[in-house]
Image (cartoon, rainbow, N blue to C red):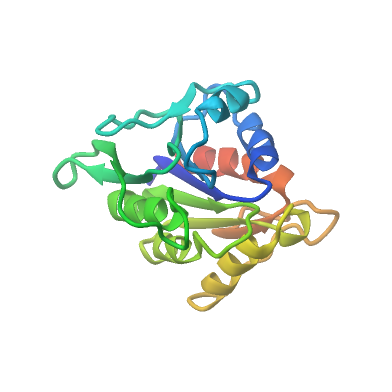
Amino acid sequence: MAFSMIVVGTSLGGLSALEVLLGGLPKNFAASVAVVQHRHKSSSDRLSAILQQYCSLPLGEAEDKEVIMPGRVYLAPSDYHLLVESVGHNTGQTYFALSTDAPVCYSRPSIDVLFESAADAYAERVIGVILTGANHDGAEGLVKIKMRGGVAVVEEPATAFCRTMPEAAIAALKRISPLELAGEKKGKASSVASDSILPLSDIAPLLVNLLTVSC
């Protein structure tokens, strides 16, 4: 079954990491991409403008009740949880919801909240990506994506600006299944794995490959 959504979570050092990841996605990238970048609640929407300079896909902050479209990148607004919801069962139509519920892992928006809701909405059609960050947010959400049949991708901690978040995600995934470690030689992936730990520069090519082979 083809992948429909990529969900990405990052925190400390995330701006530079997102520039690399989003910059590696081609104009014809077919899936939708939803991103949680931890930031201060008073942050402006300048993040969208900055990242759009590196991304060839249309990019902007998600709005409440916005229908999710393929080939677009959506950012969680500051101080709101971003959730994916579906219209009925098996309709294939999904939309975003914004929430001001309490912070999760001290964060709003929370990576866990986005990942868990995406797993519920898309099941095996979602890929979760954890990048650099300074806390454990996203680890349990990535586990849920894996448990629902989706694919888990984690930045190699050695390439991360802050390795805490990737290491927490790897530890959580190891509790449910062994990870196939990719890129042991010269930082390059030896194969397309169902679950992968990759240097930052290799994640976008993997996503493109996964979408290609799943079509």
